[in-house]
Image (cartoon, rainbow, N blue to C red; front, side, top):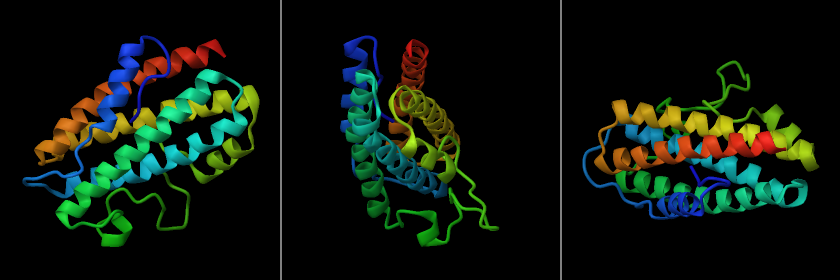
Length: 191
């Protein structure tokens, strides 16, 4: 849910500006799919902010550091937008708060289930201990998985959602994520 890492500056800038321009209200009809998407965005984006916060001290590649910085900014804007939508709809920020099921990340048996593309706690702990090129590679691989998970979430709300604002943002986000996966894959291949 952020911008590309390398390649054309105009694509990177357009993606960054797109994330920053997300509306914080979503007037009109909505349904459980819209709510689950917004709640899932908060969970996904929060983990990306945490991952990106590790890069300044652990990454060795400047492009990875720059990506992490842009990602933090973009993900914080997306969290704000999703929280705004949920406030506008008078819905909780997480499925657990509202008892709606949705995109809960913990299994009923206490297992460490994860929503599509998010890191397990064990993988996140490994990332927290990695440094240098090992961090760069692990970070990029995790970002690719996150972006692919977000594309999957986006497709879900496009198929099942009702709110026009959310669907419009989902179309934009899917295109951005697909572009970013390509950029991340190219950067990973350079390391």
